[in-house]
Amino acid sequence: MPKSAGTIVWLRRDLRLSDHPAFRAALEREGPVWPVFILDAQTEALGAAPKWRLGEGLRVFTQTLEAQGSRLILRRGDPLTVLRALIEQTGADAVTWSRLYDPASIERDKAVKAGLKEDGISAQSCPGHLLFEPFEPKTQADEFFKVYTPFWKAVRKLPPPPEPLPSIRALHPPQEWPDSDRLDDWKMGKAMRRGAAVVADFACIGEKAAQDRLDTFIDERLTAYKDERDRPDLPATSRLSENLTYGEISPRVIWHAAEAAIAGDPKAERGGEHFLKELVWREFAWHLLYHTPQIESENWRSEWDAFPWREESEAVQRWRMGRTGEPFVDAAMRELYVTGTMHNRCRMLVGSYLTKNLLSDWRLGLKWFEECLIDWDPASNAMGWQWIAGSGPDAAPYFRIYNPRTQIDKFDPQGDYIARWLPEYARSDLTRTPHEDGLRFFEACPRSWDLSEKDTYPDPLVDLKASRERALEAYGAVTEQKSKAEEDAS
Image 1 (cartoon, rainbow, N blue to C red):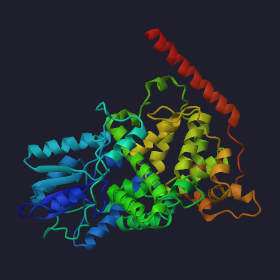
Image 2 (image 1 turned 45 degrees about the vertical axis):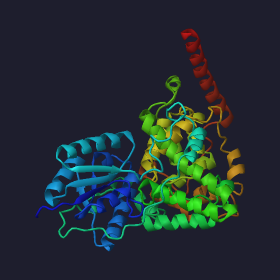
Image 3 (image 1 turned 120 degrees about the vertical axis):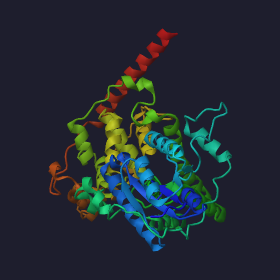
């Protein structure tokens, strides 16, 4: 293949053509453009559900590119080695990509950029994953933020995110293409086993589906968002976290759509402003991960290292299986396994139950979500679990222990959510028929769990009052120990 100038676009979590600075930068150079996705060790290590969902995103994005006369080159291996081989094959003299901000990606991308520059290849990283670079918002003391509310206020004072770039139409494909792996040969859904066919019915895959999801939310749900967003029995949220995870829609597109809705209808202001706060909560998570990467695996507050977290146990396994005897908790865990997602209110509830009522290590929950979520996001997952456990920045007070029974009255008053996901509960109410979605849990869960839709519902795993008092006692001992250490140090 004769050598000619051109650019490789190294795609990762940016499977779209709209508002894509890295793709746009490649097209602004002369010569053809080769889109490539590399299955490297970091991607191989993804949990079962996010790895499957990434594979499906790649499948749809491949079709999008082919519809416009381009292709997606698939290669497996070390990114720098793969890119060097592609450069040799194509004659490309530049590589562009969208920045990522988790510790592993930063380390990988620095090594790739350094290696390419040594070879005399232009290496350009571009924004696009976030509204703001995580190093942009700063306190008055020129430090990073540790509390969300000041972070939100600071973001609101920054210039608004730039208007989204228009969707790309001319992709500058080469006349000849290098060889590519077959996506099916990667078997990205292998670890999902029989659960893949179930979760597939609930996934919303691709750029067009993401835009449709956003349009529906803006038109039908934004106005009532603040009032209804905590109700898992209602279709009140955007559910765009799945598409943000794989870059099928950019946060700037979402931000400006919400701003336009607020400007066009005063009734949308209350819900719209709160929706923007939730989008910035995601930014805050990435801000913290960038500045304190240990949040992924270590207690953000070091005093929590002394907390008597319990490790793996039968109780934790029953939590995973949705067999705790607490209907709201179990319904949420079933929703997770069937759909690959979970309502945010329920994430807080099941997190509180695991870390406080069961006194189990938050990292056990973090790892299970990492395995099961199709909207898995390393920053949001880490911050969310440490927030509910009490060990993280701007965390919920440890004494905030959600009661899964009183939560039903507040957030599922008619019992519709529990009945949908918990067939055992529905059968106990003669006015209800078990919902098909809840029954699919038994189709999706591992056979090794030995669960059947005919099983009777279990008794509560723990007494809520007693387990709450036990958690508070453990917390009190740790805070007393911390106070004594500070007193001795002074």
